[in-house]
Image (cartoon, rainbow, N blue to C red; front, side, top):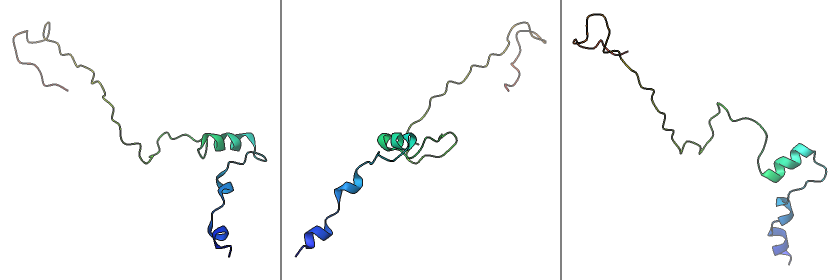
Length: 78
């Protein structure tokens, strides 16, 4: 019986075949991704792991030389 030969998967299916493909497809196959498309503005699964620390710009308020004098409460911040 040749039962093992029929159930065994052929390992040749996983090999990368570069002959007969154009240069772009060959490069995609070698690098292991599907295309040269941008991901800008797209949601990528598994890419939400990191975080960004964004520095907040300081807002300065004028204490001296303002209308009404120096020794009074500050106007509300923006």
